Image (cartoon, rainbow, N blue to C red; front, side, top):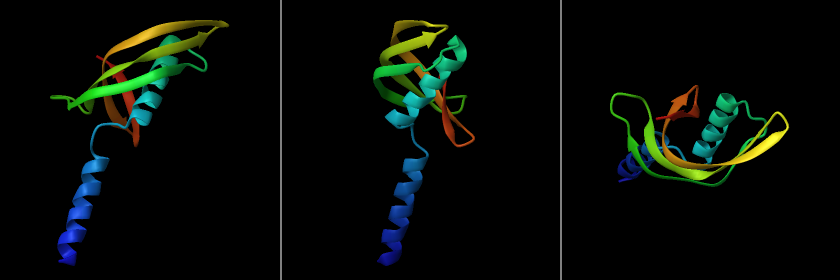
Length: 101
């Protein structure tokens, strides 16, 4: 009986580690994407949400509907950009990375 419980717990933890990114991990990845691609400094994303994540065929990671408001700060200026789209999230060196689709 104990072997069944242990096996079930191991399967549960293994599944949780290999699934879609958490909201926090996806937000961190998306923020990094905007900072790197737009030259932002201290970019934040408000009201961030991911939904409808599905495994991507033919590529690593998950495609997720992503929404929020990007507060971009660059070269002394700031702008708010609505974020509504589908992004792919994959793992690289143990961290989630966001990719525009």
